[in-house]
Amino acid sequence: FENVEKIQKILKVLADVGLGYIKLGQPSTTLSGGEAQRVKLASHLATQKKNVHTLFIFDEPTTGLHFDDINKLLKCFQMLIANQNSVVIIEHNLDIIKCADYIIDLGPDAGDKGGEIVAVGTPEEIAANEKSFTGEFLKKLLN
Image: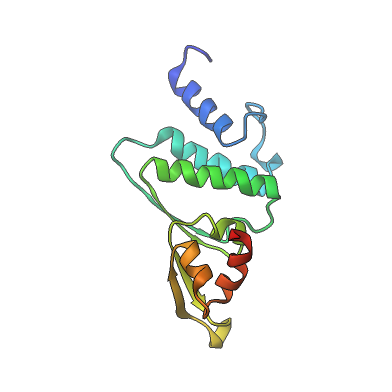
């Protein structure tokens, strides 16, 4: 496929998101949840038109993923942002939260005792906020 630019671009993006080992024609049912998620993101990255920006909303995207897959997913998010897309992530995984540009911390608890904005700002600002339970745990990761 060296001479087919469109296919070459897709294969490069698949390799960039850590999926270079997948075989062409491999059934999608054999992919893990993390692999399937990255295939979808790679497809978007490979076919995104210039000056067309997309808002992506992910709800707990790291649930059930292996630590290595989480790092690869983070790379996908960074690639989306580098292509001028916006990424909103609802997440409890501190390894993802600490990489955010901006955090809206909801709480203070769950259910009826939550749903209020406790803190907003960068990971460092959240970590410094004494009202934020998230900040309490985030502080340990950032130090």
